[in-house]
Amino acid sequence: MREIVFDTETTGLDPKTGDRMVEIGCIEMVNLVPTGNSFHAYFNPERDMPAGAEAVHGLSAAFLADKPLFRDQAADLLAFIGDSPLVAHNAGFDFGFLNSELGLCQLEPVCTTRMVDTVALARKRHPGAKLSLDALCSRYGIDRSHRVKHGALLDAELLAQVYVELKGGRQIGFELAAEAAVVEITTTPDRPAVRMAPTGPRREPRPHQPSAAELARHREFMAGIENPLWG
Image (tube, rainbow, N blue to C red; front, side, top):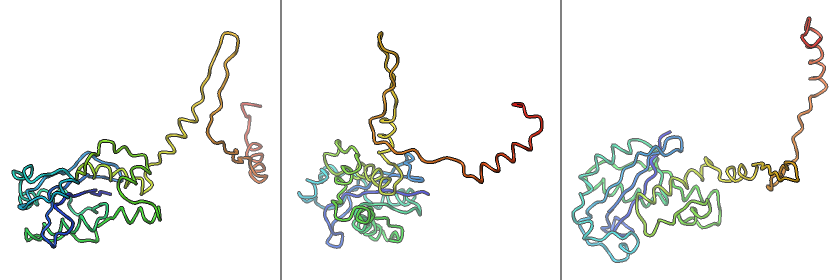
């Protein structure tokens, strides 16, 4: 299953009041595994950059002045996302800006039936917990130390890892359990090899004894073998 995890950066919070998209980052995933294919672009918003927005993502009007307009990149973006489901954090926000930009280009909007909102997934899985991208990265042990400011491609990469966790596709605990289960053998000149028991939690062994019916069938099978090698 092909999915696109994406994030946007904007000049503000509401495209209906004239705010514009200035960056988009998309990560391609197939069966919850990143393929390495991505789409990333900056856009000239054809307007000023409010100080509050610039403080969040660090994109100034001067930096964006020579970047292409959204309409110049729209065809490439639409070709990349295709008809795949689109995954975003607080997806209504990103869909709103994406469809606003498409509308300004007189292009068809992306249907919201393709929308996968990781905030909704996280709220269902962790009711009452903090649901920001930073909070979810902390919950799942995802390194975000390089996230000094918001960035569409970086945030999409982090969100892809969070999305896998929300879908149950990777379990860090299994890796830790595997490390704890390693058995070490130590030797000293005056002591034979000593096998060190794992320090992790232990479980009682599961019963694997054959039933009476299984034993009876086994005896019947063995009795029917002619000239057995072990006879």
